Image 1 (cartoon, one colour):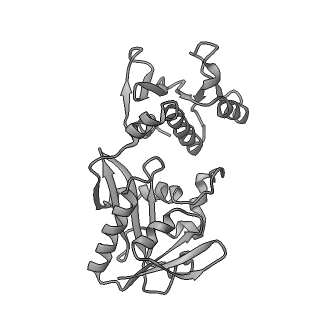
Image 2 (image 1 turned 90 degrees about the horizontal axis):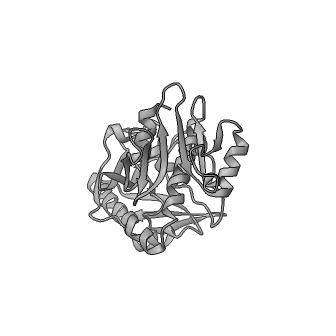
Image 3 (image 1 turned 135 degrees about the vertical axis):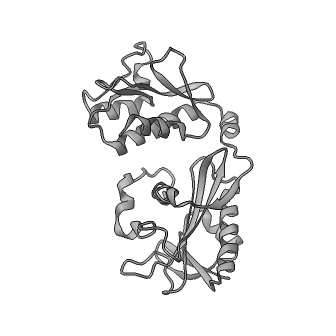
Length: 281
C-alpha cells in the first residue's frame, strides 16, 4: 500500500487530523488530542506505529514475528500498547484492520460522554453517489454484515464471495441506485438498490423486476437516525422512478428489523434466520 493511501485512510477516520508534535517525523494522526497512528516515511524503512490493546498487540506480534514489534520508540511501560509495523510486503487488509483497531482503541479510551460528543454527526446531507465513489460500496457492504453480540468479525475478503459480491459488482447499471449520507466531508452511510435476479440472486430477491435494498451505516454512527433518513430518501426515489415495490432480507435478531417495520415493510416470507420483507410503493 502506498504511503499516500495509508495517510488518506488515517485522515478519513471521523474527526481524525494530522499533527507534527515531534517535528517533521513522525507524522502523527490524532483523535481529540490523542495519537492513534505515527508514520515514519523513510522510503528505505517505512513503518507505522499504531495504538493497540495489550491482547491485540500480542496477537499481532505473534502472527507477524519480526514484522510487527513493540513500539520501538515508546518507554518500556507503554510498549505493550503500541505496535510498530514494518510495511514492506505487509498485507494491505491486515494493515487497515490494525489502523481501525488503533482508532477504536483511542476512541474507547474516552468517557462514554466524550465518545458520544465525538461521534455525534450534525447536518447530515443525503445525496446521490458519484461514479468515482462506487468503490466505497465494498466497505459499506462489509459493515452491513450482521454480527450477533460478541461475535468476531469475518475477514474482509468475505465480500468477494459470489452471494455477497453480487450486491456491488459492476455497480452503475441502469437499475442501480445509491444514496450516501455525508457529514463534515465524511461518508457515514449508504443505501443502495439493485435488481438481483441473475444466476446469483440476492437474499431478498422476490422476482425479476423488484429492486432489493442494501443499507449500511458506519459503526459508531448508528442510532442517530441516519439509516432512517437514507431509507426514506431512497423510498421516495424509487417511487419517483416508478417501481412498484422494493424488497430486502434482514436477520431476525437485527435491530434494523424494527426500523423496516416502521417504514412500512411487511414480512413476505420467514426463513430459518431471516425475514424477507417487501414494501409496496
